Image (cartoon, rainbow, N blue to C red; front, side, top):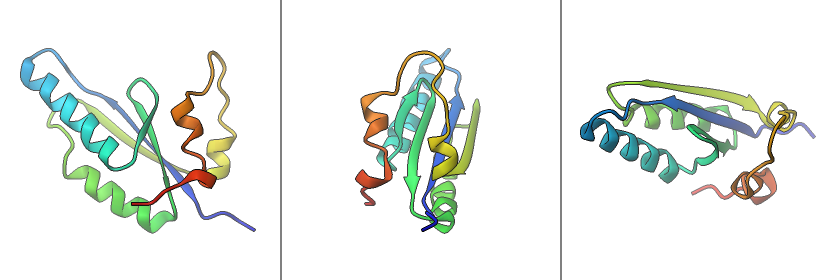
Length: 107
């Protein structure tokens, strides 16, 4: 059976020089976590999506709360492509293990 599950990666580089920028950074991080993203690496978060349509809707929701400054990128890959990712140094975080499809919870 071919899985339709996707993984969306949110990668960002946001300035934190001023108090206002720090506040925007914290708010953005809180917002993406409320959308179900978990940190897999500093400034790299991932979330499982059941299909491309859901991923597109999620992208539209994220666009509503991105900060005015910095760099935010979204990359959607298939579950298989995500599973093929190699960790060259270190290991997967426990929270990343919880991101697997078998444990997926859609709110």
